[in-house]
Length: 243
Image 1 (cartoon, rainbow, N blue to C red):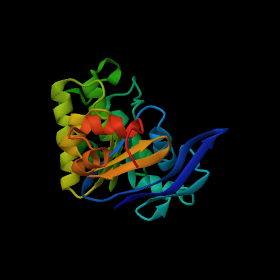
Image 2: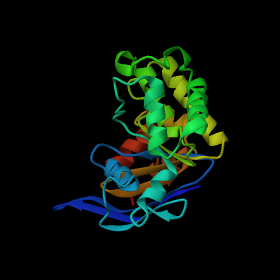
Image 3: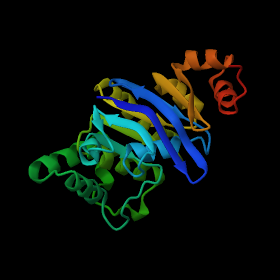
Image 4: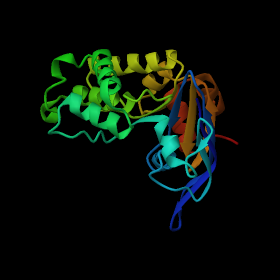
């Protein structure tokens, strides 16, 4: 259960957005993917999920080449995008079940999985309400349940606590810890350094389309010569580190 990038490259015209990105996110760990705006992080995530085709290099999900076998690779991933994309006229239960059906789930197996994620994320009281009037926290939980309903071994979370209140943020962080404890591979993107420090076993920093540092929080701070993770990230992102 791994996500592997090997020398991945992508250009848009004369703009080299991703310049040979390589890293590995392992099972049973939360790997943080960090980068400032324009660093190539979002492009890398879109290549991984098959939304973009790389110009070169390889992305593998559990050993499956995303470009060669995209449907098989996507089946092994649960993805929470930054734009949640829920259907407002459907209920929470209907949103989750719809994505389960898209993943090939049917019948009692689908119904049990939907019920299980509704219970795990504390959505029982709103499960049969349309999501149009939901709070940010309720929307985030439905989007998480939708991403996880097919029980994927690899989970990709792009800014999962963005815009959430304290209680909803705590619930999402607890879920991430639970996914790690279950042995899943979690690739996690966030700009909140406190969150990254608290949750991530490994951190990959991308800047200028390249991986500029990787390791645990202590290794990242050591690479930047800083005693604070946020300061280390800024130094690495701005290239203000002696090579």
